[in-house]
Image 1 (cartoon, rainbow, N blue to C red):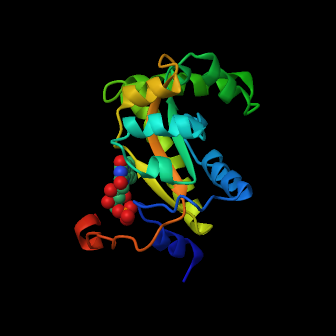
Image 2: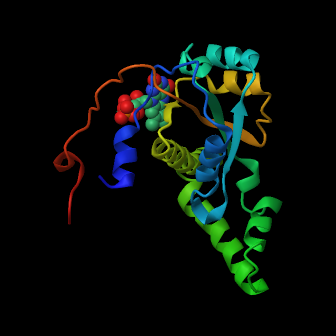
Length: 207
Ligand SMILES: Cc1cc2nc3c(=O)[nH]c(=O)nc-3n(C[C@H](O)[C@H](O)[C@H](O)COP(=O)(O)O)c2cc1C
């Protein structure tokens, strides 16, 4: 089977991790790299990856995550924060990230204007900046999970949490960031649930 398909088939939302099995540091760094290399709208890299390691913090985090055991039993837990203030049009961060492209001044200015115009007409009317940034974070999430699967590492994406609660536990500066999603990585303990998916015919249309 093709390696990518193999990884897609291996990945599932792992409900039960083996608490004894830890991910090797080199493998975890590789997973972080999959996140770092992910694409994002306008290349704004809307994410910050917070790896929660201490047992005390994990316990507190679990309380805010519907008491889900993956939070304490997995090898590594990551809270993905979405940048909000930083990616607003006109911010220093936006200027820096366009600036690193090394474009001529006029071209950079055109990008900044396009960014602001796109935000005004296509983002702001439909969602706030946090929601837009969170969409980008989910791309990194998916790449890290499938990438982890390619290394034989299991994961569970977690949206079952209190956003305010997780932010409080981690002391997140909510003027700058919001919690987009949580993800646990580790190794499965025993059999996993079978995969449920609708057939392609239900999902695809051609025009
Ligand atoms: C964004 C997101 C949030 C999720 N949140 C949770 C969660 O809080 N707890 C959980 O056990 N599973 C969670 N899941 C797992 C889904 O229930 C699971 O992906 C879906 O049922 C399909 O199963 P599979 O991933 O094993 O193929 C989440 C999945 C996604 C994509």
